[in-house]
Image 1 (cartoon, rainbow over the protein chains, first blue to last red):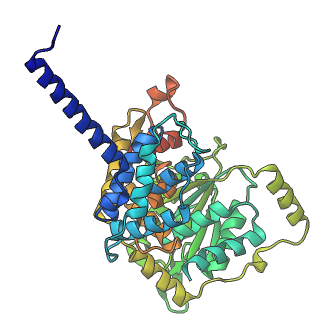
Image 2: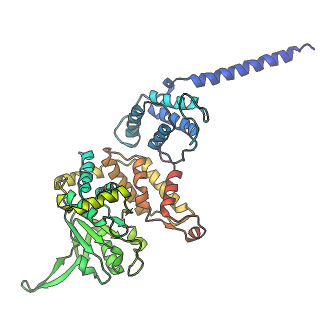
Image 3: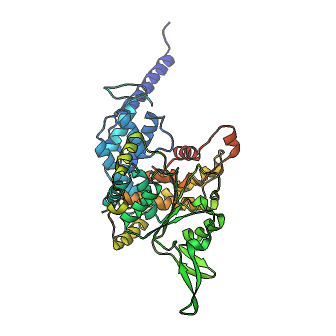
Length: 131
Length: 311
């Protein structure tokens, strides 16, 4: 039975909508860390990523504890650099004199990396299992 | 200079006390935060020698009082005596007039003596028969008590416990450490080998710098939340007092200073919270009876994992 014009247009609209949604999803996954305006936004992004990546971490975790946990889970990153970035951010966040670090690229890159590795998937020696 | 202070102190203490680095570090934190410490442990776990070595390396005057059940407040504070030569009454200072006072076995002293120590600890002064005398600056009390003793002792009431910034439990050392202790003690061991690491001027400067460490509003909010959570905790009948939270803030400043920072981060609070809050909270007896909890430290740890710090 031939499809009517209405059905054909509805099907076309569906395909277009799903394509758009798919493209949006893929775009969000491929977004580089360059989109974060500063370290505060990067650390907020990282906080959300850590919650998704390591839900076993208790609510009261601190950055140092979270980094330690990620290291234990085998997440590969330049941890020396991450520790430096954290110190700079904390100096701004809790100190009274340090300016807000403008560059949040490395932190955002770690956040995106955690997002790309959902719980339960093991990639190249990195443990992504909770606990 | 800052990192050096911690390392120098620990290296001097290590000369006479083995395996007590953490305890020595906590004593230093408390000292810099101008607080008093209660060392709790069975006899023979180096409580006294640790306090002596600590005082010597900081170059402050040290006195020890062995508390006994027949002690009177004037044995510690001093008293008004009649001077025959001057034909007048004068105040004779007691052993409490020192920089670092070791109150050995504090729970053996009767409540009258314990409460006489309260004013000294809180106000840094002594009042005898209307005569008030300030104590030397700095003034720190390191009290010791054996938690296993139940006879002939007067347990410290909550208000007295609250005066101690920290309670540090000193357990038995591990096997390797114990062997090293025995080996060390077979030779000649005394605190004379401990060297002073800080001059009087440096000490004053250090206290000033600790007092200048920034505690942000968010960090203060976090401390308050910890206090609130302890008061809402069903396994506790007594939560943390405002004084406890103030002392936690002071302590975290000292921790931050020793880490070389001029601002407090949430880790600093977590590092000392157990020692500052552990002896101040009281377990709810019904929770203990049903086996829900048997250690206040366990509850404090749970609170720390539950309350979200500023990130």
